[in-house]
Length: 245
Image (tube, rainbow, N blue to C red; front, side, top):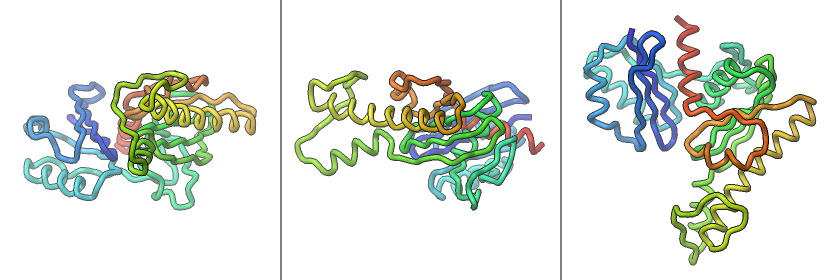
């Protein structure tokens, strides 16, 4: 039973090929176009199911469905957020409006770590969601990620030019470092401050479960209990599929 799991974000796509419980293949696509070599190889596999978390464009969903039909594969199942599943209860009044990537990340985190959690996904946007130990979702935050903040600054200034050479530090000694360090530390302070605030309110220790393409940029400066997960959305996707079978 060979299953294909897909996590389609705003700027990247991750996929995993799983046989029973064993990972037999995985990859990352960093743009909207499906990589012909990878996907043509997948087309030769006899898949029993294709399961998708997508916050990307409708074009991707359409193209994936066309691909599946072309190669006589099962039609993709596009997962949506619900009221309750796998022990997690959605805080949204309209649960389907919660981003499915946030939903799946919370499901994976709750089923892997005990106690109160703060699930942080650092990508194009930075999202934070708080969960009680019983799986109750308290709500969360969405703020621009580092790349969006940087783009906004560059789009509205004329003399600032950046490269990618700045490393983590305390005080910038040039404009490149000043912008990079400043944005990095803003995001770290935001996460750290909200965790301290929730810990004080609920009188419970909060474990931060950190994922996303820019997770490592946040890691060192958080100074709170952190668990780093590279594929939290895919983990949650697999949990939902397993429960439904």
